[in-house]
Every structure is written in C-alpha cells, then in structure tokens.
Length: 155
Image (cartoon, rainbow, N blue to C red; front, side, top):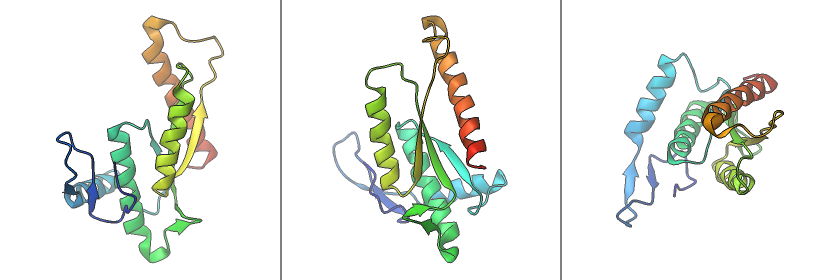
C-alpha cells in the first residue's frame, strides 16, 4: 500500500515478507524524470496514464504524480486538490461481473493520490469478443478508448 504523501521520497509498501519497511524511491523518481525529459515531456505538459490498478500502473501513478508536483510547485501545481494536467484513464472492459467494482476501487485509490480519473466503459457493439481473440480485442478497445479520451481532454 502506498502512502498518499506523493511528494515524499520515501513511501511505505506492503512487502512479501510482511514487514513494512520504508523504500527510498528517489532514484526511481530521478530516472522517471530523466525518461520523461528524453521523451520530450515536461511537467507542464498534459499527460494521461492508462491505469489498471496493478502494481506497475499504481507505481506509474506515484512517479507521475511526484514528477508533476515537483515540476509544478513554483506555479501552484494543484487545482481543486488535483494535480494539474494529469489524468488517469481506467478501462472497464465489462467482461467480468466484478469489473465495475474493481474499476471503482482503482478510481478511489487514484483520486486519493490527487490524480483526476476517468473510468471508460467498453461498448461491445458486436457482442463479447470470442475466447480466442479476447486479449487482442480488449487491447484494441483500450487503445481506442485512450485515444478518444485524450482527444476529448486535449492531451
């Protein structure tokens, strides 16, 4: 579990050995900042994150939130309690009964980090994808949703 003090360089996580030990993430934050710069992105740019709720995407939220707030501190980087120019996109594929509840749980966690969040629900116009093509169809749908949401938010 990540603490909500994003600007801190130390976060608590639940480790497999059941001990809560502080983890210094400053080197990860520095690497993330350097990679964003290599990609031509600066903290004042508008950025969208695809968030599944898994450990990788939640770590991405932590790093992106820290990068944005560190870079925007001089300009007052929060608006109504949310980090300016940062949007998390959660896709509910609607393929499992519990997917809506899971998307809402992820949304609450992301909102607690100060990241605006949008849950997009898939509309399968031709019905649920066939079993052999499920992963591919879900990925294609996700990418289309990401593109549409980014266009809508001018990201």
